[in-house]
Image (cartoon, rainbow, N blue to C red):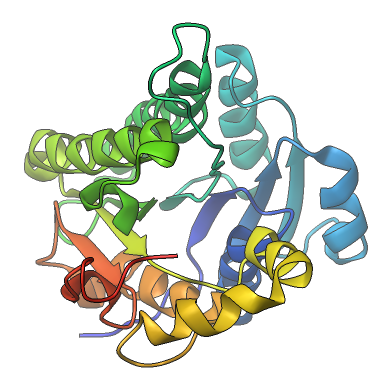
Length: 269
């Protein structure tokens, strides 16, 4: 069995920065064709605009993925560029604070839309396209497609100030399991990666403003460090590859052991 994704076509959302960008670039390095998608088109072009060339493995798509038409256009652009889609990585994420006692707080709606509904709608359309391609080519065995969602250990940890984000991540985990069962008979696998402290663009910026927080984060992690985005990218590659051909409906935790520690003994930061 191989972990290769060479020759595959992948859509990676949230690809303008941080973890999404690391995944998309890692996939290109591994020989995949990749549609880099993000809501921030300007930043996307600043980061990878020079890498996008006709007949090359990199394409860019910018647009508001909260809109159903934009999601449909993303699928169409990927098919126009590469003729097919084999892998979808839902890496578009947002985290914002919540006031759990405020009736005016709209963070729940925002978090569910950004961290759940975009992934759900895109997964549904991508799965239909994967199935159509399998029917067209007569792919009678092997993997038809793979979907990998990016989640967080916040789904299983209770921090009231992150209530909306935690609820959205928990919903995403359940969506992963539900879609996995629904699509398993058609040979499309659906999994998720839930991570703890990873040096994303947002965490890097936050640590610049709060350097005193680095040590508590590291001490709350048994492995004693913050992960690099590349470590998440390699885990996503595994789940997307045929080497994980008997893995579906799973949430792979990448947190250096942080979720194993009693929060009273080692509070999360």
